[in-house]
Amino acid sequence: MSDESAETMGPIDYVVVEFPGNRMTGEGFPLLVDLVDRGLIRILDLLFVRKEEDGSVVGLEIADLTGDGALDLAVFEGASSGLLGQDDIEEAGTALEPGHSAGILVYENLWAAPFATALRRGGAQLVASGRIPATAVLAALDATDPGRPRA
Image (cartoon, rainbow, N blue to C red):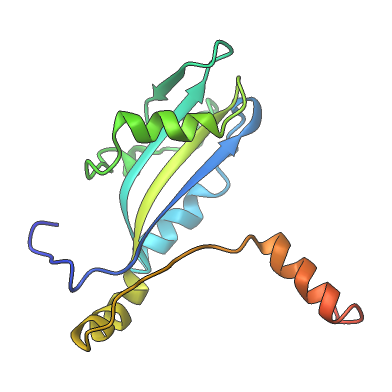
């Protein structure tokens, strides 16, 4: 990433996905790889943590986290830009229930990079950002049009 500048990068997002009871099926991982392969996102950091019953947060090795031998996560090994520090891991841990694990993913939205670059060239600046949960969007749509067909 050293040959890139802030002017040409796409927006950077992060997600923390909790796996209750440390149950990771691996169903989403091929879809994540597909997003990378299609050039829609670039993974900057991916790490897994577990919150112990005593509240401590420990890192997990990227490997066969499902334990069934069917999922090879080696493709994600080394996905570490250095953006995530111990304080970020601890903060993510506060969102977890004891006995649960999580994946912490930091990614660049490559699909938006040309748009963001054009805006920056024109002097625009991002002054706010956020995410609206899908459940909130659906509830708002139902409230405005209770008879709308469901997808």
